Image (cartoon, rainbow, N blue to C red; front, top):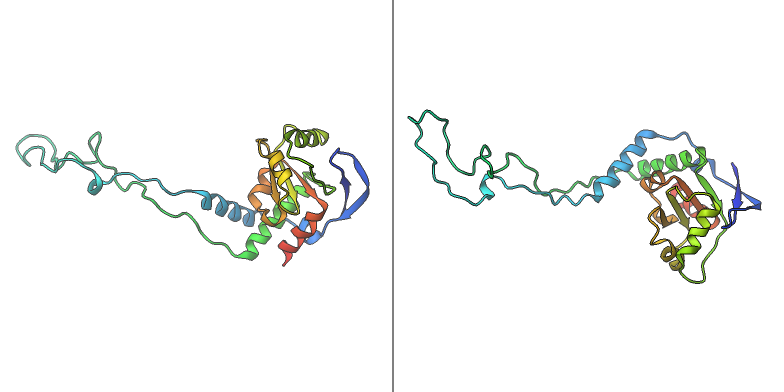
Amino acid sequence: MEVEVYNIKGVKTDRKVNLNDAVFGIEPNDHAIYLDVKQFMANRRQGTHATLEVSMLSGSTRKLHRQKGTGGSRKGSIKSPLFRGGARVFGPQPRDYNFKLNKKLKKLARISALSYKVKDNGFTVIEDFSFEAPKTKNVIEMIKNFKAEDSKILLVTSGADANIVLSARNLQKVKVVSAHDLNTYEILNANHMLVTESSLKEIENITLN
């Protein structure tokens, strides 16, 4: 599949690049995408939630009143979950939400997400570029050139260019990621991907090998 190459001014160059159909043109697997995104979200959870159960709650263990003869229900402790300020029954405790997936499935999910982006015209290849100094306005101008000011942008580069990363750091809707760190969640979370030419080969190598 051939696609046009753009420069950072949003203008087509006279060159085209071939996208590998094994990476950017497969029939997407929705279930693989679901599992990979679910794992990504689960692995981000801190799992530090905790509630106080009866054994953890401080308070008197005195029986509130005698067992029989009052006409009321039996009450063994002020810490009972039935009372305001009492314990929680089977409440959440700290836990690890992480789970593992096969590498092949994660690769299939990433390829499926990339194929969706190309299919939906949310994938643009741009020339390799760099900034002389970190300036946010450089990235703002580039996004305006592609008429994507209101979109979430994922800018994929070949390596960690400090000036590009620092230039986009203060922009809420722009995320810069190196091809090596590309994942399914970030691909789907973006409305549009701007991918540098040199990062295409890296994406193919990481995905197919």
